[in-house]
Length: 469
Figure 1: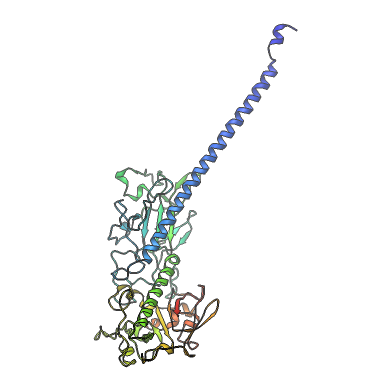
Figure 2: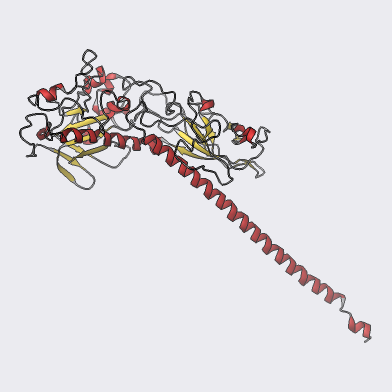
């Protein structure tokens, strides 16, 4: 064998070394690619977590704002702010039409930090016509359309990424007088995500010049454009992403958090019953009343004639606010006072009690607040401190039967299709019937004497109640 032959590797050996090098190289490339994908996946997951956290925080702030409305002004309990239309963080009222009820989330007004989604964008926000706080529709009588209470519903339609309706914004989902639609979205918060070219071909300009135009932040898919909406419309609402095209490209990356009836209304009802109970407690604690309470308002008079007086001997009904009629608008608990020998006070005690004449929030809710008074604590001589001696209320609860209760206070919730023909409340005669608001033992139109109940919310029971002591 020659020296030359011994000094050079064979062609086969060269190919073997090249193959090994190639395998190692491809392996390194593969590991690098996997690491890059993993980093990308981690980044995507972190962006999504940031977005979800911002949406959740914004939704919670909206609930807190609506439930925390001060009761001494013109605001309705449940009012939501107008959007921010100039991108300064403050709500910009008035917002009468849909075009001004879609804008930036008013984070300053809500007491929030400058929330951003995972792509660093500020959030957007839309509110239903019935829940905007400016302008408000008048609520003069409790059944007026401008009142905000347990029968108030949202008006915005929302679809999921598959274009299926999740929240139907129409006024009723079926055309009957008793079937109300509590499924519509009351409000929603939108995380716009990174800019993209919309399906209508518009490129999203996210410079300061385009910061207030929703087209530059909100996307369109399946003929649904998130840059606009119409109240009570099935076809023009919002769609939550991400939505991809048939080729897998993201065409809509808006993520939405929806404020629903079930998110908000039970919170409002609990505040109503707490505030009403505070007034009863404060009234009874006044020395002149010596632990006694006023008579209840008659359910027919309150519904038919808007009279929330305190007829003698009436221990079950609505909570009174003393209105005897238009001729005597300032006459308050006349019968409660007369039946105590003029010893008991004839007015609510004043702040922190904010109930009765002069408080706008109460006009919105007083049709829904019902009251039962124990015989032992009814109006009468205040020289003797009342005590239970077999003539107080019993309240059935999931854990025990609560005996010797002074009063029972309950707020009627939404209409339940499975109860009493759907609990109709459109006509005055229907509003006079307690069973169209209350369920079980709380329906005192056919009661077990002085027995009431609390339960977990079900399809056949949704009363929010408190009792004393």
